[in-house]
Image 1: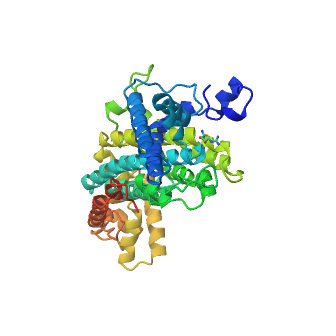
Image 2: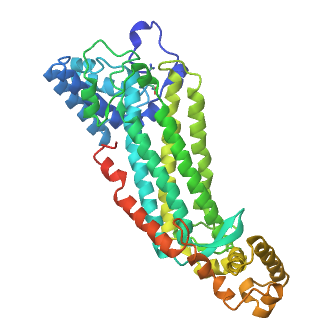
Length: 470
Ligand code: ARG
């Protein structure tokens, strides 16, 4: 057991208590951020005359040495320390001696952990947004390639009106675009530095918090020291955004599972992304889509868990807040993994265009257009709706579709039908006449693709490379 706070105590901590309290098994995840934050802290301390130049140099050299030794496997992060902060400080003291004891001047683990977690999640936001970007580009390419891939559009999972695969993919493009923009907003809102808040009430040392914040790429320092050490809003916002990403992925997965079923046969998932059955030789299962759908629950769980942890906490820091870590790390890793796998699966997926078009023709998806045809010839819409309803019933009885009926059969139901009905209810016409922005007609889709290409070119991520997201 190696702790930073032995002075006030006369007895050793019970081992079970130590284990229960310790966080090093998981907070070593932000080992590098802890070092980065400490370096910025001592650079500022020296600028302010709180440390001498040689003390600062010794500490910075010690810290970079520790970082390198851990990265290269010469030094192990062991469980005898309470947390990663204790490990780094103890390693520094044993490496450089007296000067190492000055690292924690004007700092508490409360503002230190708040900083480390922010630095870590800030980097992860960029990395998740990068995964989303890859998915968006994949969807955009899918849209460009499938402007005339007709398929049924559904409401209530019943065939409703024909759309195209480009249009369907475009719906997900919009969802993931919003997800990316949500991450951008969260990044901008969280990008203020808590270091210097101390335990809760700032410090008596003349720290330059603006300087530390700028060294670490923040917009500026946080403005209330109590809030700084107890704010976990940015994690809750992030978990909420991650939950929404998973919800979107899960919906898409559900559709792919349906499309991949024997009954639909719209898609074939590449062998590299499917799995077999140990007993049924014919099986090729969409396990990846099912697992992504399944993992959605644990990300929602993380959000509810952290909201619940925070709900009764008085100001300022409380140890409950240590619970923010494992679930956030797990949610981030889960979402990144799911995004990468989903994109990979989508890239290799083959679409059975024929099966999709046949399915669109079979389900009376052109019934609305048939009614609109009659309306165009002067029949009031309500009457047209009724006539087409009877026509559909007639077709169901004979297991056929509107466009397969003879003109005599059609005229028997309504004399208004003429030879031009066949073109009016063809799949192509039904889609191509839908030309308002946002509709599936290919001219409308092309305009949307153009707008979204531009969005990708101006991507906020490109600016975030310089860590200056506003
Ligand atoms: N492991 C702690 C956490 O994650 C670090 C902060 C400890 N502060 C304290 N006052 N015990 O929250």
